[in-house]
Length: 443
Image (cartoon, rainbow, N blue to C red; front, side, top):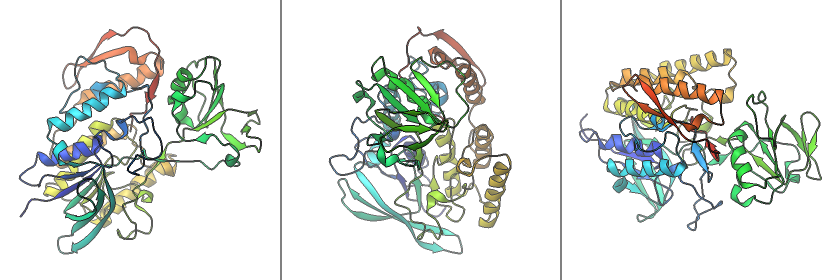
């Protein structure tokens, strides 16, 4: 490598902090990164915000966090492998502790001084290509913050904006007839509600928060198309098939013909991929980047080996996932990993997609990794020449999954401790207490 490379990182959530931390660790190969962050603090999706809409500066509020959330993964599985949580904390944490952890991570590795807060990225585009080496230079145009509007050039760009900011709104006939249908609400304002309908399978994670914040007599209807939940639900919660339509009087008709008149229709239908600063036209794509088929090694478009979208797939353990992907991406930039040809990578993408489709995976779930993730991590580490995740992470995850299936109301009372890279142990059980919320940290 003849000169040090300049890297831009878009987003200062967990993935962006991880990218910047590893760039800073390779000073022989990279200049200090420039990290663009839309808000005034680090943390990304782990920043709780009561408000909805826009901040005072006009930037959109992207928080998908809810007030009483606790993680559904233990900190021993969630953590970055090189930066453990405080061992005195319980295994299952409130979201405030995760945010404090990310703030400490940023400070410990010296990332914070390289973050441009309250700065919006308007456009990321390739501007030159040396066809002999296949090298691309990128222009990043940003606005706001102390630098105002400016355009800068980088050798590589890490997209670390996550995919929990653009709510997916389903097509439900007659939805316009329900004035209080929303994708997210401050549930703390729902104390007087008597009936709430949660639409979508993700609504199961909101149920307890809704029950905690509504009146004791409130009825919560969980409407989804999955098999009925097998574990006991609170008496005021009932399951219903998917919504067929919303009637003109605001009634909600379900697939079995039953009708209810909830005060709130909460759409728990997940989020869409959204990269408004990337243009399909500038990348030579016939569709926008978020519509591209699964990416080679799940993190880079084959035709652009210096543009990395970290965490685009549906993952199990987000922080270890970012830790592994980022190191592989930097190995590509350093030249440690020599990528196959574009044609070979596209062919592998097609084979992988065809395999999943043959197994019955729906097209919209092609980026879900499930149990394939563990082998994926080992492959990246082997190719990139860095240490793989310790086997204890997979082992403990699988144990927690068993506990969760056995008793979803109490599995978070258990504390764990990692003993070695291959062994964990159970510590004392926490007293039985009500759980307020659950975060889908399997991302």
